[in-house]
Image 1: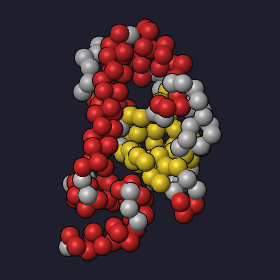
Image 2: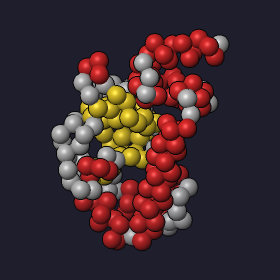
Image 3: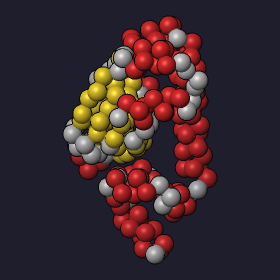
Image 4: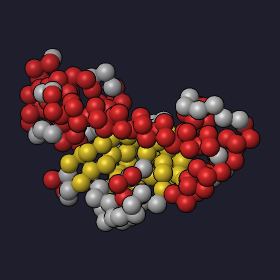
Length: 188
């Protein structure tokens, strides 16, 4: 399974095998069961994660008022950066929406690797550039597209539609489940 992560790294930077092996040794594996929280609102983030399998979502609110802010799938790297870097309590809950296998690295180890390996700094920079682009695209989508147009984009993302429950898709789109039901009915 580490091969997927190695390929993920190599798709972003040119790295020699010795450095790669040293970097990989800093990661540990963690299995999170469906519904289990990786990070709870009010806690402070101390780790970065790579999803080997499964899906996680960032949400805020409680019970029926949960609003899904972000969904992350297999072969993606993530952190609750608004908590991790300033070391402030998070505003989000991060939950596994299915059984999820993670590779984890502490902030301290990530910082150490950034100091030790310039190529790892480049990797980190490229990751956060990619994430920034995704965030900008998401903001623009909300500001310029209807919920139906936004939903139609996700029809090309089978993982999103298959692994995320309808009520979470609706909250991610910023609409009610009934509105999503009408959109889905109109598309057929």
